[in-house]
Amino acid sequence: MEGKVVIITGASSGIGRALAVKYAKAGSKLVLAARRIERLHEFEEEFPQAEILSVKADVSKEEDCKVLLEKTVERFGKVDILINNAGISMRALFSEVDLSVLKKVMDINFWGTVYCSKYALPHLVKTKGSLVGVISIAGFVGLPARTGYASSKFAVRGFLDTVRIENLKNGLHVLVAAPGFTASEVREAALNSEGKAQGESPRDEGKMMSAEECATHIYKAVKKRKRTLILTFTEGKLTVFLSKFIPKFLDKMVYNHMAKEPDSPF
Image (tube, rainbow, N blue to C red):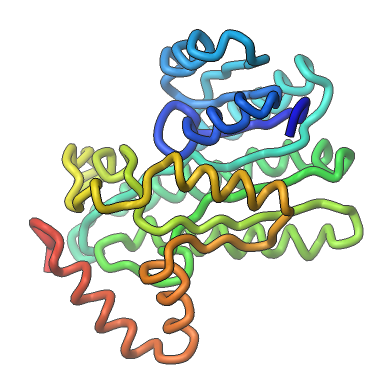
């Protein structure tokens, strides 16, 4: 990965920041994008030896994504890897949620991936690079009280799978990475039924995979040019397996599991 030009969206915290650390230590040239530009500047100070371009960007805005790619090519001349990591979650029953919440989640999670991928694609094809989408197990199995989140992740998976097939003859590598529950700020920032941040995670973060461990798996999957990465056995691989063969049973399991969350809407 030394010398590779790597764009990471949502790089100010969680998995995105952990990925930035991995690539910085590997000698990659980093382009970090996030709305909280001050955090990206703090990262630059932490890794003064790394070549880093920090860009303030809201991926839900097409123009921001276009400018992100323009600045990358202007600075480094190419793009080797795009990791679409920026995302937001929500937690509310569909019967109670304001539809604006679903739109906001879809704008960031799905359209953010589409916009960045659209403007990065010609550069990635030129370098036979990697296009990565960080989804979730919710991109394989519907999670109750997360209609907007699950819908966006299903959509990203379908989008990237299709882009992969369209570019089979172009040497483009497309990875769909699906972490299980990972300790990060995403649950604290998850939107409630009114579109406000819930402010506190409903799950025990200490029992989850760390963002650093998750980033290590994604980093290795990119190097090996894997097609799909499903993390954790019980909440990941087993869940996807059961969804294919005994979906009705899995529905009950998922419902009961999510109903045990503190302040569950069920």
